[in-house]
Each structure stands twice: as C-alpha cells, then as structure tokens.
Length: 486
Image (cartoon, rainbow, N blue to C red; front, side):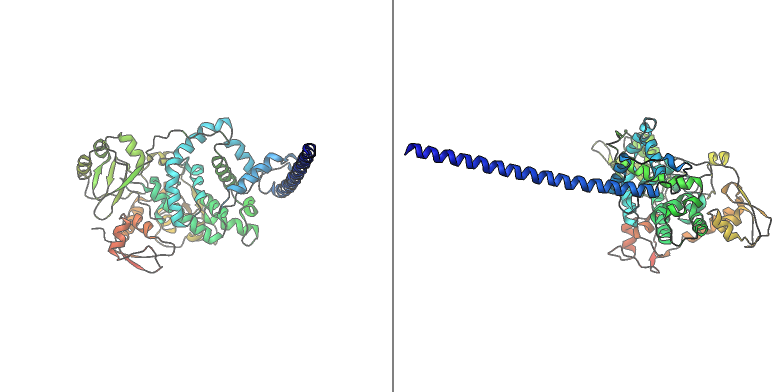
C-alpha cells in the first residue's frame, strides 16, 4: 500500500514538473515571438525614418555634394526623440539641424548651454505663462535663446534690443514704452507679450509655425517675397527656404536644435548653472517715481540683484505715475524683510523733471555700432512697398527722411533704419502717439486679452475688471473698455 502511494506521488511529481516545463517553454516561445514582432516593428520604423531622411536631407541644407551625407542609426534615434518632443511646432530633422545639434552638444558649447539652462529657470516660467495665455506654443520659448541668449541688455549691431530683440519701430507697433527712464524691450514680461502677439499674427497669416518663427528673423515681408518667388501656395518653411536670406535659412535649424538639446539636457550632460536670479518673486504696482536703490536697501537685497529683476529701467528709477503704473519685481518677502521700510521706500518720491521726453533711441552703443542703411527708390516703388521690404513702418520712414507727403520720386535715396532719424519729426510723431495712448476709452481689437491690455496700459488686471464691471476675461472685438489711471 505504501509502495503504491509512493509510486503515485512520484508520478504526480513527474507530471507537475512536465507541466511547469511545458508552461515555461510556452512563455519563452511567447516572449521570443513578442520580441521578434517588436524587433521587426523597430526595424520597419528605422527603415521608414531613414527613407524619410534620404528624401529630405538636402532640402535647403546648403549641401553641394549630396553623396557626402549619410544618415545612420544615430540620426534615426534623434528623429525618434524629436518626434517624442514635438508638440505644436514641427521639429523636422535634416543635415542643417544635425550640424547645430552637434554644435550645441559639443564641449565648446557646454558652458554656454549650462548658463542657458540656469537662466531658463527664471525666464521660461514667464514665457510659459504668457504664451499659454496668448495661445502661442510654449516650445517657442527656446527662440529667445537664439535671439539674445536670454540677455535682456543684448543689443544687436542694428539696434534690436532685449530678450526678444525688438527694433524700435516694431516695438512701437506692439505698444512697448521707450523713453529716458524705461525701455520695455528689455522687460521680459512686456516684450514677451509683444513677441507672442507678433508670432500669433504671423501664424494666422502664414498658417505654419515654422514660417511664423522664420518671419521673426526676416520679417513678414521677407516670407511673402520668398513664397512669391517659390510659386507655391501655402508652402512649408523648407519649400521656400532657398529663397530666404542665409541667416533665416539657418535660423530654423538652430531653433530646432536648441529645442532638442535643452529638451534632452540631462542626456547631453548639461547641468543648470546658478544664474543668481531670484526664482521666487512678486510684482508691485508703482504709481510714482521711486528709487530701486532705496527699495533694495529696504528689503535687504543687493541693488544689482534687484536691477537684474527689473532690466527695463535705465537710471535705477521706476518711472510710475498716476496715469501710467509701472511694474517692480522684487524677491518674495522673507521673515527678515521689514514691511515698514519697504512701505517707506515705495512712498519716497524721487525728484524728476516735470516732463519726460520720449526718445527715438538713446542707446549710445547702438548709435556707435549701427550703420545707416539707405535705399534708392526704383520705378514703381512706393513708401508702403519700401517699408514692407525693410519691415519698418511708413510713419518711421517718413519721419527719418523728413517727408511730408506719401509719394516719393524715383532715384531718391532714403534712410531705412533708425540711425537716420529726423529728431524733430520723430519727436512730433511720438508726442502724438503718446497723446492718443492717454485716451480713457480703449476699443478691443482681435486677439487682445484683458491681461495684455492691462499690462500695456500700466494698470492691474483686477482694476481693469473692476472699472468695467467684468466678472470674466472674455473679450469681443469692438468692445469699449474704460481705462481709469487716476
């Protein structure tokens, strides 16, 4: 009896081992089958990406020897990562993009990229908030690095200024203030609203984010001329790139590469450098002329540190008034800050002239390095077409050349940049614009937002809502808003 039981137990054990072995074999076969399917899918995807790269690799990349460019598995991996990173703005890949990715990932650029990542911790949240509010893709924030390396005091050789590199004429079109005391092209908040509005308008016009971004470099007129030369209807950037200036042809690849490199900063060994910018801040509304130095002393922070948070103020003075309120950014108040001292500093008025002259451009560095550019009028050209060619306003063109009429004779040599400003006419035009901006009623335009209007008019959003009995932020074009600055 005992022997029979032992036999049955042994038989059962053998059956169990066989069953487990069969299950393990089945699992291994299933795993191998799954791996083979996945491997085949990856191979197909790699082949598809390589075919795609082969079909576009020379599109406006400037390559002469097309046989000298070969894409490999490393390129395929970059494309896969770009696809994962892509949101609204197309992140295409070709030889030109690869060149900039190699550049930004090189040892020579490691220090620069670390600085950019450190500064981005302060600037990018500002851009994200404003772009989200304005309906502009957040990933366009990387464009500011290409423009200015996140330096609000950056001035190009032709006078483009600030983190978003606005020329004087364009800045005026987008309602940025510039006078003896303030240059809002250097203000990260005000200039970001202006940049977002420009980009949104360009996207509405061209229907393509890469074309909108490219127009930020060469102007909308430059894009229109390239489209006309291409003979295409609603083309992509790459289809008209060969008709664009070389700088603009490189502009988009540089933007895509910067987006990729910082998007995968950790993989590239890029660590954020300490930028010494206070990351936790608060905004104060100022309605009088006050000293930044006095505020810094009151809250026990270095004056230079406070000026870095407020780069738009030229003379260390916040030029607020009852008509136009200004913004002062300070570090968030800590326990060791004395609120009474801060209150006193905010209410200690600095003595200034009763009138603040509006300047065309008082940056001496620009006047020294920028060369006056001229255009000889050709047959059939008008002030409007010339202004469009150089992405300037007709009003500035007339002021710079002391023109009273809107017609111009063939052969006339015209100044087409801000170096040739006629001070008297420019002053008159700016004074007129200032008077108009003091109107107590504002008509809402397409694309306007409440916060943008409040920022532009120098008042708080809550006050603008209260003055107009608004419980929401929805606006309609043509709506009249009361602007109460008193």
